[in-house]
Amino acid sequence: MPSHNLAHIKIDDLEIIGYSVAGEETVVAVPQLDVCFDVGKAPDQIIPINHILLTHGHMDHAAGIAYYLSQRNFCGISTGTILAPKNLLPPMKEIINAWSRLDGNKIPANLIGVKPGDEYRIKPNLFTRVFPTKHSRGSVGYTVIEKRKKLKTEYKGLTGPQIVELKKQGVEIDYPLEIPIVTYLGDTQYVDFSQLKYIAESKILIAECTFYEDEHSGRAEAGRHMHIDEFTILLDKMSNEHIIITHITQRTPMREIRKILKDALPKDKYEKSTLLMAKRPR
Image (cartoon, rainbow, N blue to C red; front, side):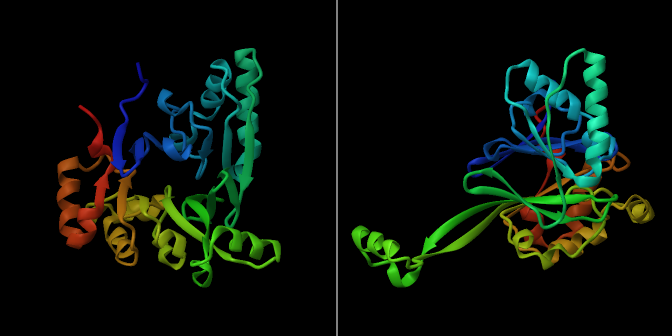
């Protein structure tokens, strides 16, 4: 029996599963891409996923790191890889070592420190790119990008043997193509993410919008979170096909959040948007 009742969203051939409530837990996975953004309390459903992309060290996003790694070892699965801001690696190692002593068994871990601008290969043609966010020291977000090579227009009419011959001669017959599939902002204050084309054009944008009521704007600023007023400005500059909203506050009922979103967002943006927590099976 699964340990969590996770939300499920299907977009074409991708499934987004997760749970995200501010201050409680945030974990969002895309199994087909073999990535999980933040680990939350490490629900059973994400244990088989090989890559955890951790945005920051707050407990509601990172509490399950040792359990995730330990369960993989217990189940005979290869060591999990956790990407995290570089400044988090020393305390993460301390936590894993402490749990190893408590458990009586060494917990294997593949920890990789990242900074904005870094890229990490997930699969042969699938990479994640790291970008800065505005939340806690060193906090980052991630975009998963497919990299392809596309044949240049002038060579499209050639036969296979002709293309092989050109390659032998060292002719560059193709050019690199990047397809941003999904971007996860994690917790962040407003930043003009449209300045980064791969975020603005990512097919799926997973973004926090924590606070919705006018009187909560101060809470948003104090906690370095996004308020609906800022969220509206952000989306106005983006061209994503799908928007998944995470990290909602418990201070506002879901039905009220839906109403505020519908009133605040332009019709086209609202129709593209889905509240992650509204997609939990009952």
